Image 1 (cartoon, rainbow, N blue to C red):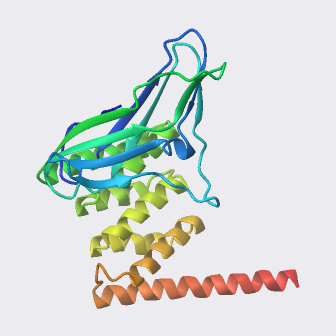
Image 2: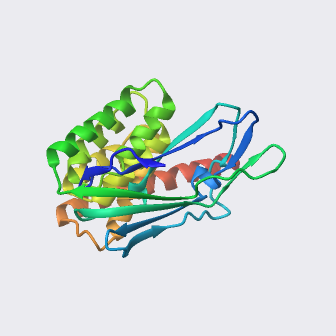
Image 3: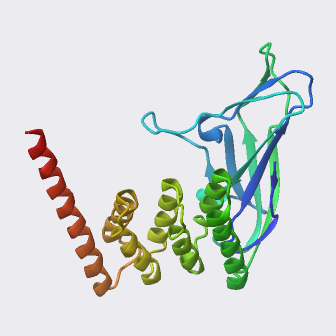
Length: 267
């Protein structure tokens, strides 16, 4: 495992690259757990040894996720990026260590376990915030999400873009929502980040999405807006609160009307 960049600016994505090779002459089975991440126990420490944050993935029985069992043929390789911004904020410049323990298993077809390195300590330096650098990173990710012909690569770029916890990302999230093709997961990630930012610039594209002709996109945006109304951490100006309330109330009324029409049809 390695960091794709061991020096980043504040709020820039921090990504760990997981690579597993099979140099043997027989297939091996890798178990990374649910969502191909459950078997990673991740901890962020300051260079003084103090724990900053810890993440051990847990998934409820009713939550749908992809499995994490992977079969590698001889000389085959598995690669995956783990975006730490999904769980860790790295909220201040400084020196960090990302400590990752692999708790899964790698076995041969006979069932015999393959001995592998399980503990990784990755040094990371976070420099002060650089808006120009953040815009460049966000622009590249938005272009990758919108222009890639590989849906998997587009989805990954959208997910990384949505971990940037900084107001400069807003126009690029808006660009993502306006792509000719945006998968539901990509749109949900972008809308979620806009909601967590909660600025007036972020609320504008949420209001637009809430009125979209795409019912899935509109539903997610309306849910995010409803959450904004309930949160206390980021106060919303009165005029914006009124606009959000009108959109949410209108969508609730439309859903009630549609449900009534469906019930009438069933009768």
